Image (cartoon, rainbow, N blue to C red; front, side, top):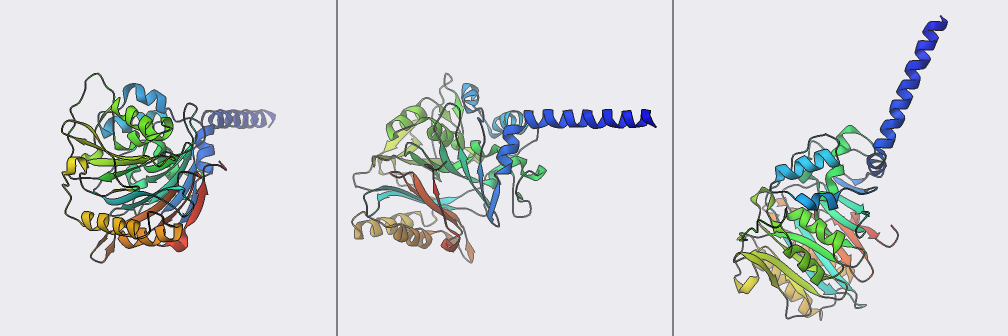
Length: 352
């Protein structure tokens, strides 16, 4: 009897030690998952605890989605496989000011279906940021959604730092991707290659101004995940803004001659104006009309109304997945899903 009891105590002790070791090894991942919260169906927030190895990733980059999958699987998911999924999207974004003169960066993300995650990060060697992640990119769908807290099905959300579709950092720099019909870039064999979402992570983690963001992006090649070519709208708290496009073999920048800047799903460089053929020009014109009629000064309420109005519909299908307004001057904002601003919530980088 004593021998059996001793064996039992030894087994329990070993299991406790193993559990302790696992908790220590996975402490950042477990703490991150403990913050995963569901705001409503398919809408989540999470704070990533600790560093996610982006500086290490920048040494080699990724030439394909498979390369990113391998890195994320090894570095963040501890061997749990991930498959990056991308489909086409149509979006609108603009930079303006509010009635107080604060710089505002507003953005719609239109997509077939996209559960969303608002992610807070603070890397060891970079700026704190808040970003919005399309969780279909991590393999989730309508029939397979995260729950809350620490569950095995939630581990894929740990890939989120590498998958931002828009965001703002503590220096007041914001960036968003928007699909365009084509892109052209000559690859430099001496440069590391990033994809569209890790290019956003680069800027959020490392850039304090628009000019710094441009200089950083010029140091890397880019490939477009899922062959969905994109351009970027970038702005900072000074009011400077730029559209970054890859055209004529190089990174091109488009500055606005107006006090505002608008981006939609067409190539703006050199007035090429090649669109996807899906309301991109109508959406652009409507934003410009509203901005001009309001003297380039929109309250949050007017931003909400405008974003809800111009969200893409495909017949009976509402493709507007989320809308977000970043205040680059105050480092605050508000975000809401599916044109439903009754589910809106405020956020701030200053309290993180």
